[in-house]
Image (tube, rainbow, N blue to C red; front, side, top):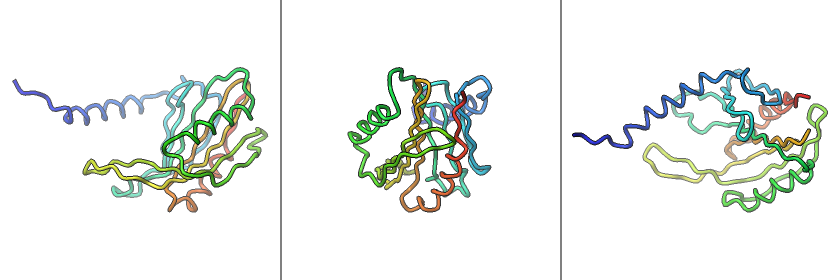
Length: 181
């Protein structure tokens, strides 16, 4: 009897995950917010709470494997405020092995909602086709919202070398974010 090698199962697993994500019906999931990404981005709605939404720029060719992306987390946090939510997230960030330095912190308002923004350098891991891992220098922009006992964490991530080009796109995306009442 032949033994199935584990690496043979990965393409099948990837196909099943991709198929299940493409079958996600957005109307069955209540995100509690609205957001619009550019036409050249692909997005997935994942859940009602936790890691709820992800989007990334579509590749321009087969060599375009390091793309800008957005990750949104949503969590129920009764008893918090925007300030305490921000402090809790920032404390975790500063303890992360991937955190390098803070570039900017700012209180701001997006579509009438108070938010806190932090821009920081971090190290990301990338697995090459040769199965080597290399470190990437990333810049992340995190927006934190807190409303009706719910914390929303929107994180935009890009390579540090593409950040200046990606920033206007991130700004356009965040300008469409609205928490539903």
